[in-house]
Length: 297
Image (cartoon, rainbow, N blue to C red; front, side, top):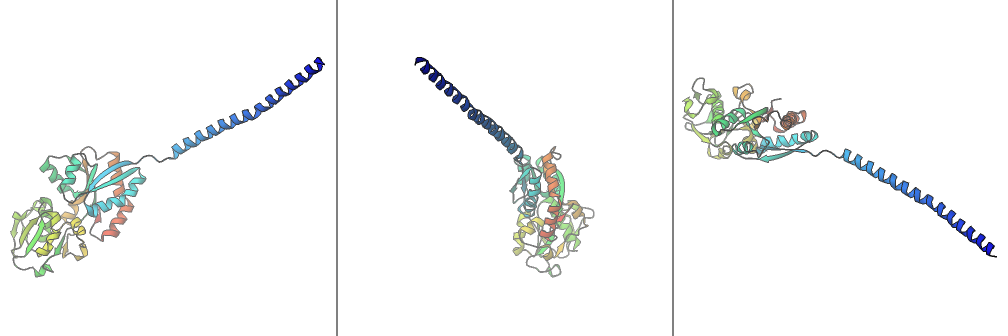
């Protein structure tokens, strides 16, 4: 009897051992699946990291509202495709964007022509340089109280910008219309004091450039910078006279992107110039401004 009990007990223990061995297989399968899942997740994470776009580098550019800030916005998608995020800071005068650039608050600015930039450097002991010319804005003579140049009365009031480079440009345009005569050879250095003939005794009023359009109601005619004419809603087609495309002014007064000296060949600067001289921006300028802004590329 004891022998039978022993045999039965042994059989039970053997069965239990077999059951235990059989149960180990699902455990092994679960571990393998877990390892595979971990590996798969790791690979997916790696692929996700590789697919994530690189962070855009920021370029901060100062500009006058029109047309410069508008042109920059047109260039923004081109810059983004090149890995840069464009931030535009708008200024309504010709001094602060250069001071901000010189002080390092901007990476570049885009609002001025080269003669003005050079004059600013000389007067303010700054070292800002052109990284490239983008467009030209023809100056125009616009009607105020008097509807045409032929109707200008003796002593008529004429508003011109008061900064040296733009005043010379305005005076040259008045001279081209036979309204005044300047000292021979004075060219782009002309000032009001260089007027040697003024048969109509025009009263030439020197006014801060941004304020000239607002003076139209108080003067007979005004010579206005292209960007301020655009901001005031004036069209080149409405001007009484416009600078000739082959004039000295047209070849001299291209609007430039300015940067701190030594940064004109930085990768960010090169990218900005490339975007601003792209086919997309050229098309935008030509279709938007109807001759008030002329691409130089």
